[in-house]
Image (cartoon, rainbow, N blue to C red):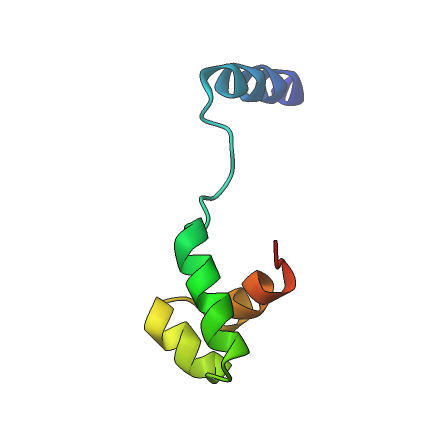
Length: 66
């Protein structure tokens, strides 16, 4: 019964457009800037501090080069 109600709630939220997950930390322009600086040899820890994100997030943006 609980699972059924949960599925109904999720379906309603998806219809309203509020069930999308976490928003990206950086927009496309800031992500491109991050990739440029990384290509120029700026240390990853410095990039994380400058952009206000974790080092792991820096690496995730570099892996997802689009």
